[in-house]
Structures are given as C-alpha cells and as structure tokens.
Length: 77
Image (cartoon, rainbow, N blue to C red; front, side, top):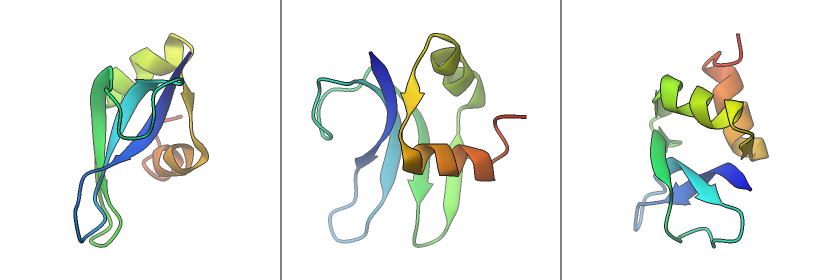
C-alpha cells in the first residue's frame, strides 16, 4: 500500500517534502516519487497536482497532515 506522507528535509528549520512512499518504509526511507513541498515557517506549498491525483486514483492514502494541506490547496474539487 502507498501513502502520501511528509518527509523532513531541513536540519535546523523544519521543511518537508510530500512524497509517495510504501507503508512499510520508515519516514526517511526511499520514496517512490516526490509530489510536493511544504514549508510551515513561511507557509509555502508547492504541489504537483497531476502526480498527486494519479497516486490517489491508484489507491494511495494521504496522512492526516497531508490531507489537510491538500484540502487547503483545494486539490479535492
């Protein structure tokens, strides 16, 4: 099963990538594809919407945080 999950990138500042990753992998493990970027400090978000919709159509489950980010970006319209 595939999940859309946050993967931490920043050392001192929290910056995250939104990735499609296998459920059995750990948070910092190897991802299938990078589908977005989220910076909570600057409140910036970049989303690759076609890739996100592709994984959602294939049955990927977003985590609660990623689902909130996608709702704010109005991806589910």
